[in-house]
Image 1 (cartoon, rainbow, N blue to C red):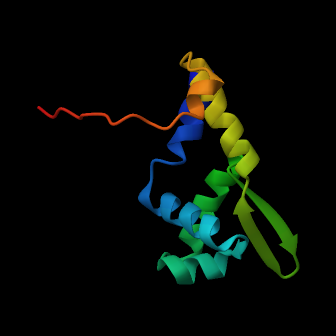
Image 2 (cartoon, helix red, strand yellow):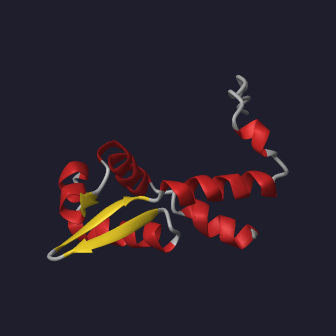
Image 3 (cartoon, rainbow, N blue to C red):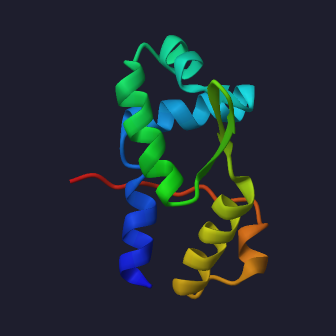
Length: 107
């Protein structure tokens, strides 16, 4: 389980992938070209990032010749975050609570 979690959360550890995920969340289904135009990332780099996200189930691909459409796989995202919370022994009731303010102490 820890290795599976590491691979899953690694896909969120890149600013460009986060930008792509935000665009998909805002606009729904998008092509590689539309994502490249909206993010100023090259189409080949967008494809590479989407492939990693697809391998982890975070995005899904719908092919309609000649275009490929990507969208968020919200069910998988929610499921995996819940699994991770259970891995940390955080019960489902806590997930629905409003977060408390946390003071961050820097050294």
